[in-house]
Structure formats: structure tokens, C-alpha cells
Length: 397
Image (cartoon, rainbow, N blue to C red; front, top):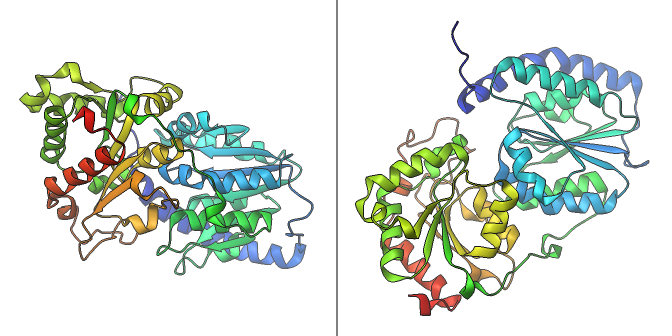
């Protein structure tokens, strides 16, 4: 008997596309008809007893949405907040205590995914006053799933070409790809609460005493959604070698449990790194998320990273960052609070075809991410040197 393969993200995306379109064709006429006949009350009063959030992919974007979710909690303090998500995101988001409850849908096997999804759907039917907030932007199946909860109010994003959501959701928020991601989530909070917010109202957590931290954290990992965000190994090795040669810091290479073996192989491939293993640790998958957050917050002076979940987590924790961008634009994802510009430095290659991720189904480069490959290590090192000077860490240089 052959063992079933785990579902890859490209396969999930194709499944979402084709099965999603099929279900939309089936449900859309019926939904329109029932909307006309039933004339349900879709106003924001009375307030909900339960709000179900749907976010199956992307821990980084869920972290970015955290301020908006907190505003919703302030507006509806008596409501139960539930998150329907992937098990990995479930474990990652738990320490932030954004939700009262999480429903983790196993996504490694088709049968287990269907069983979990149906089980949670049936569970949602038991709530008397339910609203659903679909935080997925590009998924069609989550829109259909939201509809099948029969929630009184169903909030969701839509893109201009994706017209069908305007009829399957009761409340629609235009997702503007040209603006900051946080702004879109803020507009969602406004739709759910009926209250106007300013993004700058959100206070960030800023640490102090970076001089006492023993580690510099480095992250060159990201989800399978967009591996073209990664830097070439040679460039990461050069950055590590410079830090080891010119500072007294230890280096912590971050990643998920699935990244651990690749990081070990990376270290073995570069003799100058494997020779000083007492100063480099492979932190991928070594601790639970609570310990991981504590390690970043209490032991790392700052983070060097590509556009990935750890960047947004570092901002949440108040950790200074040096981020490196190629196929994504920091103007869309990196909202730096006023007064913290020197704590969050970035380098954007700004090639002619960027940003491409989430904009093109087939990337212009075909996956050959020259925007990251052609970067100059010296430019990245200059950003790192600037951060060391700003944080007054020059005594460690």
C-alpha cells in the first residue's frame, strides 16, 4: 500500500482554484435568491456572541493583522474569538493570546483536511449569534466555507477582478495591493466594528538594553508560498563570516522544524562556519513557540531577515531588524512607526518586475529570483554596520 504524500502548497492552490470555482458556480445563484427572499438583518447590532476568523496560510500576515484583531476585541469584549487555521499557525499564534479558542485543520492529507473542515463547520452551526471574518485574500474555498457556516454577517476581502465575493459575503472590504498590508486589516476592523481607526494609534513594544544580548538572529527561511524571497546561501554565509570575524556575537540561525536539516547542511557546506560551531546555533525547531519568542526578545540584539514571518514577529516583540527585500516591496508590508526608523533598516533591490509575489500567477523570472541573487553583500553589511552603530554595539565590533 502506497503512503499518501503530504499536500504541497502549489497543489493546495490548484485545488482551491478549481474546486472553489466549481462550488461558487453552484452556490452563487442560490445565495442570491435566498438573500432576496429571506432579507436577513446584516447590521452590526446586536453585537455577535462569537466571531470566527479564517486564516489558513501565512503566519506573517496574521501577525500583521494582530492590531486590527485587538481593536475588534476592544469593541466586542464579550464575544468569543475563534481562529480556524493550520496547526503550524495555531502553535505560532497561541502565545500572543489573540483568540479564546483555535480550530486547527490538518492540511497534510486530503481526508483529514475534509474531516476536520466538516467537523468544525458543523460545530459553527451550534452558535446562536455568529459572525465570520475571512482573512484570506486569494482563497476561493474559504469564501465558500464562510458562506456554509450560515453566519449572520460574513466579512471578507475582495480584489477588483474577484467579483464573486461581493455576492457571497455580506460585508466586503476592498483589498488594496498597492498600500500597506496593515491598512487593509485596519479597514476590515472598521467594517466589523463600525468604528474609524488610525493605524498610528497602535503602540509598538520597543525593547532596551540591546547591549546585553549575546546573539544576533539570522533568518533566511520562509514558507513554500514564495521561496523566491530567499537569499543565496553564499550571501548568507558571507554575512555570517563577517559577523563572526568583526563582532563578538553568537549567531542564531532561525527556522521551522522542517528547516533544521537544511540549516545543518548549510553549516557543513561552509568550512569557516562549521569551524566555529561554538558561536553558531541552529535554532530551527529547537523549542516551542513560547520559548522561541522569549529567546528573540531576551537574548537577541537584533534580527537580520528576508521578508518572512520572523520579521513581523520581531516588530511585535520590539526587536530591531535589518530586512532584505526583492520580489516583495517593503512599502506594502513594512510599516515602521514614527520615531523607530533607525530600529528597522531595510534594503530593497527594486528591480523593474518587483513586486511580483501575489501579483502574478506565473512569476516574470520563472522562479529565477535574480532580484535576490544580484544583491551586493557589501550593501547589506553596510545596513548591519549602521544598526550596530545605532544600537551602540560598537564595543562588540
